[in-house]
Image 1 (cartoon, rainbow, N blue to C red):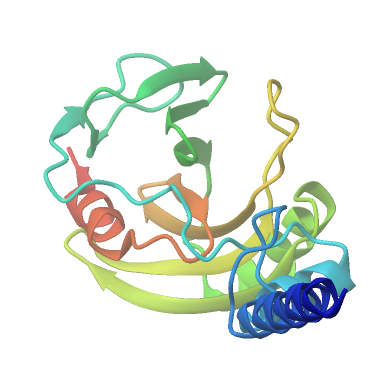
Image 2 (cartoon, rainbow, N blue to C red):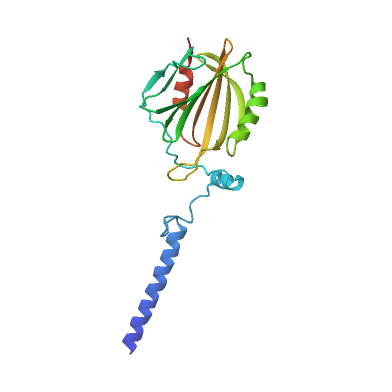
Length: 217
């Protein structure tokens, strides 16, 4: 009986040690059965998005354009105005709708819209006209910033902002996107070049390649 009592006590101590070790592992960032860790640093951007109702940003978004991406020249052949060219990533899917052409791959999109415009856009006209329009069109529109920047085609007005993407028809997922809109103007014609992709995706260089490639002809 004494031996049996000693074995029971040993088993009890082992169970206590196992539970303590498990609690220690949980606190140090070990994954739970659901694959989450309680000690991971809080996602402040995600928390802010949740509070505003916007889609959460991703820490490792799948929207990075590869460094070895090839580019091809897009030359419009129809529509109201064809006097420009711009480079777009090779292999992206193209869709045309009226005066707008879009190139899409995974979570990234380049949209080109042509319109008649007697006057060149200014930071003031974009702030007072374009921003309110987008605010009513883009879900969870936020953080607009208007500035004038230089590209090889000359000075252009750039508008950056954030918004939620359309719901994926297959997964139903909504992604928090960042947008860059460039307004090019010449001889009564405006070409708006909008580039979008997931917040935190590293597409600075690809977007610069595209916007610097814009040329009047």
